[in-house]
Image 1 (cartoon, rainbow, N blue to C red):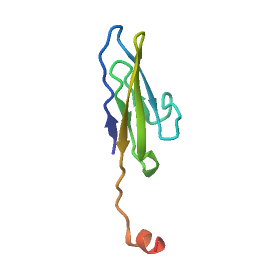
Image 2: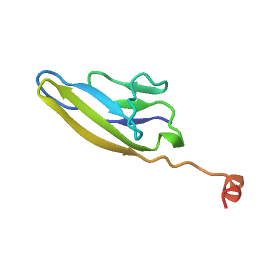
Image 3: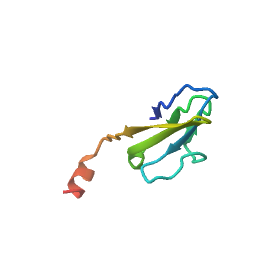
Image 4: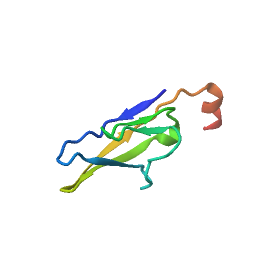
Length: 87
């Protein structure tokens, strides 16, 4: 299953985008993470538990920048064995 985060902004000149994970690390170039450079939309191709958390989106141009925080929650199915071993 995939997930997407919208980070679209408008401005003159057209903004560029930075996406940062919950640990403050840039996302660009990571396997399985695709960022559309024109819209700032982030797609996580195969969502895993460790992808849960806050993501910061920053749109920048010569006039400055604006930030937004998006949160991803990952809910997975558990088997009976996983439930028993976690008790």
